[in-house]
Image (cartoon, rainbow, N blue to C red; front, side, top):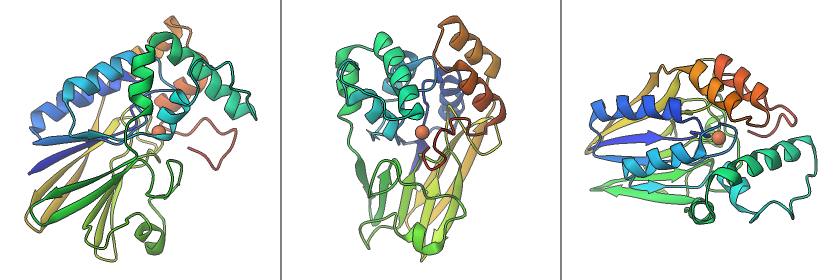
Amino acid sequence: MRLAVISDTHGNAIAFEAVVSDLRQQSPDAIVFLGDLVMRGPQPVECLDLLHSLDPLVSVRGNHDNYFSRYRDGSDWLPKNDKDAMNLRQFMYNKKLLSADEQHWIGHLPTEYVFNIEDFQAELYHASPHSLGTIIWPWATEDELDSLHKEDSTQMVLFGHIHHAFTRNAKGRLIVNCGSIGLPFDGDNRASYSIIDIHGKNISTQIRRVSYDIEKVIRIAKDRSMPDTELFEQAVRKAVFTYSFNKSAV
Ligand SMILES: [Fe+2]
């Protein structure tokens, strides 16, 4: 059984298209999406269409999907700080492009999923079982990694959110972060996703990195007058976190 794990497209459909093309060559049996479909990038509609075209086994909701869906039209959103004001600008941009039905669909995605095949069980989250915003870095302690599952019978945890791909073992359990398609923050500006092969108790994982036309997505952001394009441009070029109004949030 071959599973493709994709996450954090953030409205960058040029990167997503490149991943879809690479992913089709990998011929996965199933695809799972771990959230943050929209916000920060210029192409939320194209990302939604690409996601639907993949017919994923499950799509879970990310914190940015929540930002996009917690208010109907933004008139009740009173920004608490500079970062919140930026999220409101992103909300308004996305709201102009996506329909109310699409906003509702994104806002009602599940926040967790348990994947079972034969004796194998994996838990899927955007960030953690505890919230959509928990940050567990690749260099976390084993105890921190161990907090990422709920059930003792789980052999593997899959999550996104931090935009840093990694695979580690914690107390006998495999922890895999597939990285981000649209906005990697780990210094490698290629799109990131993961392929996992499950054969009974034998599991092998790979993190795949896919080059795409970065200049093209920046051009689209500028042509569409996307708010905060300069932050997006720096982030996609350098694969660094540029949204540092509050360093504790991703
Ligand atoms: Fe994200």
